[in-house]
Image (tube, rainbow, N blue to C red):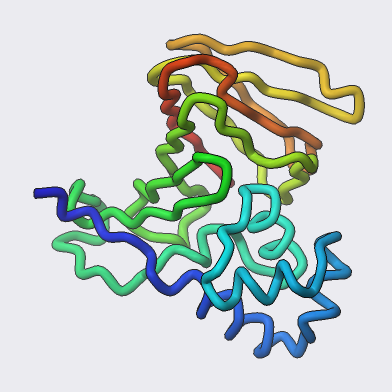
Amino acid sequence: MDKQAEIPDLPRRIHELRKHKKYTLEDLARCIGRSVGFVSQIERGLSQPTVADLTAISETLGVPTTYFFNDSLPQESPWVTRPYERRTLHYANGISDILLSPTMTAAFSMLETTLQPGASSGERQLSDSSEQGGYVLEGELTLLLGISEEQIVLQVGDTFQLPSRTQCRYCNSSKSTTRILWIYT
């Protein structure tokens, strides 16, 4: 039996944070370049955000993306995370992130990202305030970097490191699952 916990309250967390930061649906939609209806559907759990959408939401509302992982699971140690203690976020377009870090308040966070065949981070460029790097554990990852979307294909064992605010998208163009160990500052 897989004891890994799902995040059932992503819509609620987005809604509560938006309200706390005194943003209207219109304000948030305008800031992330999406429609009011789309943001409303996310908050009601009717649509899943892409990685790019959730990154834009977190940047707009002034929190790291890891804020949206539920932190209510009990852990046996503040230094270790067991597989059954890990939390998962599922995005649109076939991507999921598993939070590997035992805490979300440290200087960096570790995620295991899984991309199904054909999965992508979204049609829009990501521009995260954190520095990030990754190690391809399984499959193939395509990075699309900068305005020109320079394409770099990474294989098992390849690593990458991106400065903060690097514009990028990523996808799995292969016919098999891709897994990446991702580290964010």
